[in-house]
Every structure is written in C-alpha cells, then in structure tokens.
Image 1 (cartoon, one colour):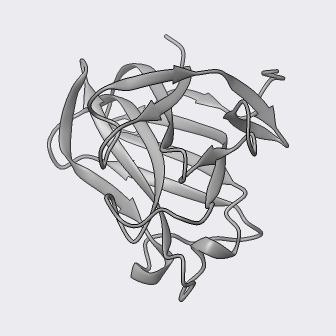
Image 2: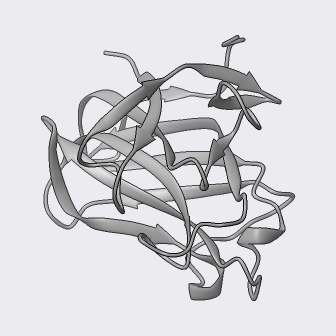
Length: 168
C-alpha cells in the first residue's frame, strides 16, 4: 500500500461533486497545483487529494505556505478544510482548521493537521482552503502546499510521505 496524491478543481462549496483533474507540481519544498501560484488556491477552488491505500483511523498532514491570511484575526479568515472519504463516499462532516477557533496552529507558515473521524475509518482526504468557511466569499488569494503526511490505524502507521519528490 502506498499514498496516491492527486489534485483538481471543484464546483460548489466542497470538493465532493463534479471534480476536474489538474496537474501537480513541486512548489518550494512541497506539492502544489501547476499554474498560477503553483499552490492550492482558494480563488480557483482547487483541492489536493491523498488516497492512503488503506482504511485508516487517523491521518496527519503537514501543510506549508500558510501566510498571514490564516493568522488569528486576519480579515481574510482563511481556513483549511478536509473532506473524508471511504470508497468514494463522504464520511462525516467537513473538518475545518482555523486559527481563530484554535484548531490551526501555525509556526513559520507550517501547520500539521491531525484528522480523525467520529464516523468510522476513511481511506482518502480532500484538502481545500476557504475564507470564512465553505461557501464563503473567496475573493483574495489564500494558498497552501502539501509538505508531507502519515496515516495510521489503531496507532499503527500505515504509511508516510516525508519528502516530496520533484513533481514538475
């Protein structure tokens, strides 16, 4: 089993409906989406998907390029959101990570998200950014890149990505 990372664009408030595939690229020390800023971009409704290759109960993703828009009190109110999937079906509610709510801790523009499901295990996550929550007014560019991640079942690590290869 290994992780498969893909990216794309979505319509509506969350990346669960019609999805359009996009090419990924190396963005600094992480993975982004080719074109524009080479990062996952809120104004373009982009997402990055990590398929863990197994059912997992917990995942950790490390994201970078989390600049001022994500900070507590920022007028853009940028936040990271995660949709959990199992066999292509949504599991539970969208999880939001927001500095204003104390659920997003950023150090040197880097944060690690701990993702758990109260609705059973999952095999895939789709990560996207919003301003003011899903469906908010996404008019100013708030970006992020994927730096790495790991996933586990009952505290046994199923796999990890700690160094991103050149994706260009």
